[in-house]
Length: 474
Image (cartoon, rainbow, N blue to C red; front, side, top):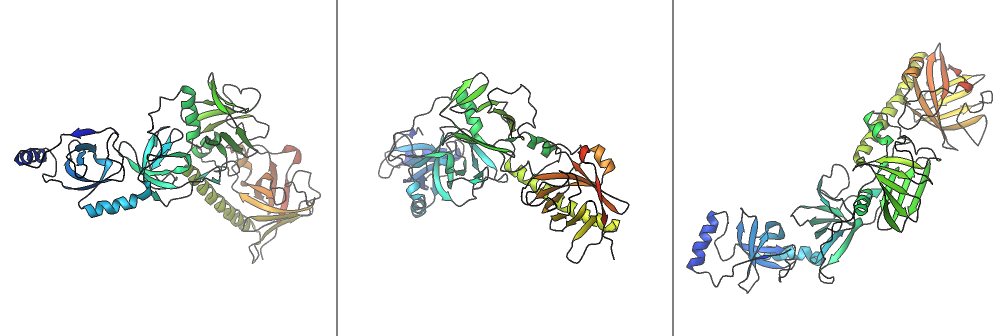
């Protein structure tokens, strides 16, 4: 921080007093020899005014937003921005503040990548408002270490700590140290101003500055059709510039791309040493490819959910928006489970004292549901192969978890009351069903799995449908 010297005064005589009165009328608050004491927060380049030093404060301008400060036992005066000095009325209070600053006095942080946020509170949640966005190579001054929330990326906790800092324009806020390097002005040479980054560096900075989510997240949120099997904080494209790697986590695959350099080839960033290529599509969308050939110009946004896919469009979605959508969907599914039990009871089914709901038939076996969301399906040997969820433990008996609330297409909802998904305990694989209560029976039809964000719309015609009798109420 360059300084502008205020004219040195040779004593506080009548001329200075008159001058001071004029300044007071212009917005300065003090006309005394000094009005208080200040703790220098950011060193003034080319002077002895170092961060952590306690100095006398002579004047404050509410017009130019500056203090006039000096060095003790000298006549030198300096004009510095208000944010650069922590003002106190007494020297004792200023010294106590200096003790609090302590070992952080010479410490600055330097952004390792572009777009790092400074937040209003020490948290990475959406309710922690971003007050400043750091540029790559920019430094901020450390003021205090803070207790804050853990920071995760892709479900993994990042190492680091929260710090209260001040930027060079006076903005204060909290930063997480994971992607910051330390500059100690007592040990390191003066940091030079970095040149404007090259085009590929700017693009790479955007890739690493935020977490990217599969493109289907956008349609799921916008259309209120969240499918929790394909919508989670675990899924996305996660960049780690410090360790030179990019991780892609998808429902069907997990890939880590380690690279030695990033080069621009046309519209694409090539991550040298890996098969990964990325094309930025503005500031909130990118196309990633890890196959031997580049994808079509306009790939399907649902590509990437199959293990054979080698490209996917990713978008930026705030993490808190994802959490909110997940909470809403979990609440909707819980309500759908209760609705199913109530509909079965209304149709004449008996629910025993333990809350168990049972359906049975000589052909389809016995299907049981618990209010906890567990199911058991026994004696299914007469059903076509593939009708029930796949199980490796037994061909005729299985158990697992059932999730109600499967969204059906307009065509299916005309014929069926609703849908649910079954997950076998031993395989974890998902099977979708449509159901309806008709004539005192529960009718079921297995469905084809639909792409993420799409309504279930196709019955597995070859498997047909089956029905089970309700266990009648007493």
